[in-house]
Image 1 (cartoon, helix red, strand yellow):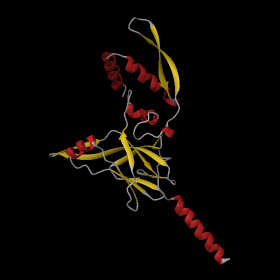
Image 2 (cartoon, helix red, strand yellow; image 1 turned 120 degrees about the vertical axis):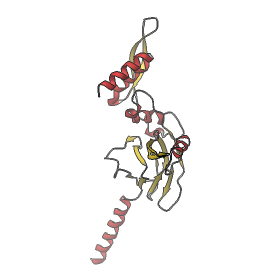
Image 3 (cartoon, one colour; image 1 turned 90 degrees about the vertical axis):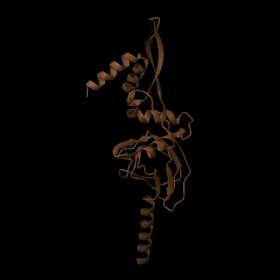
Length: 221
């Protein structure tokens, strides 16, 4: 009986250890914006800078690198554009890190050539594919997941086609230069239909109209 209990305890301990295998963490200057095609919400994150994976499948994160940098005696906040990083999972813990950016010069060099490192806990470097996520439309930061979905369906360097979501085409009417109504198409995705329509009409407007609209938005805050 004692042997059986000891065996069961050992199995339980191994199972518990396995459930915590493959924890992905980031360096302190990295924030997760998306994980495997989904917004980096509290339900996905273990804490602010870590989440669990228990397989060796392909994984994708979107990150932002932020640092307080100095230029002479001045200090300012540097925030990178979103960076897509695709890598192979591991049963080991994984660390995703960015170099420390102490000066504005460091930040500008990083901006031109971002270098994100992915390593296992034992020190093995995991190969990655990484690229800036192109942001489009009005208020692109709000629309990051939709932009990521489009990125993943584009065949780009770090794209993962399996993480692209389906889109529903919707027909809208536009007015041509000859004053006649013309039909166009705008991609509508889930709950963001209103936002997509705003983006569409913003892009159809001339520069002066766009500026008036931006001024109006500022006054609504």
